Image (cartoon, rainbow, N blue to C red; front, side, top):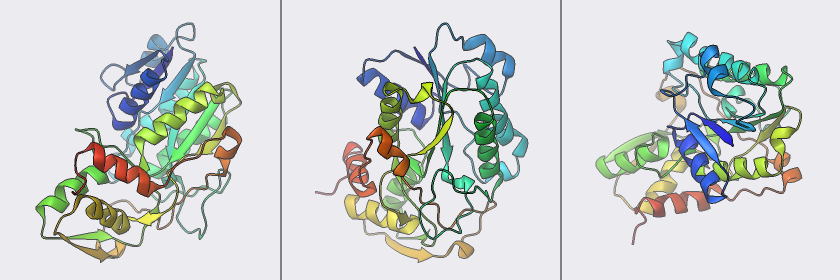
Length: 284
């Protein structure tokens, strides 16, 4: 049996769906059912004689809000992963490209130096460090720009579907580059890694995204191309769109770590086309 934390979020929901498709028993815990930042609650609910793996999809992901609520972000993203190791259950933990500073000019490797720019990125890096210095088995899987066609989920993709249909013009940042990643594709990869026994090895870092790279403006343009709207998209620089949290200008992740597992992600463009189709928004 696999325990899936953060089961109410877009990734937790897609992981549970992927487990069901493969006939693997899984039990989801949303944040109301299990607060992973509560050490006692974690130990009381996650038992090694019941669960053989924890897939940790729970996270404090409000990047800008984290600047004002650092204690909350650190509790969920940094302290909680350590609490999960106290159970003795192998862990598959989801992390982020925001652990990097974005100064690179080529994709970051799994062992590249981390240097987060924001409270959110720092808290996720602290969570990684806690796992890597523990004696827990499992893996840390970094990803980027997650989105899903599932109704009710929150992401740049869902926001663009709405705004591109409502606005006459829209400015989108054009100088921050990474790889948009379909949550369903990441979920399938996580389950495949589990089936190959990645959770039973010494803690290691892996990267998974869809292939390729683009800016937020490029991603928005690709969404518009697929759904067909008359909204005029304008490219703006990040300095023209100030946010509380600093974000890396380039955070593309190298996918070489997947080769040993024979996992081959598809392009972000193909994944986006499927997501738009599932939303019923492909132009005729």
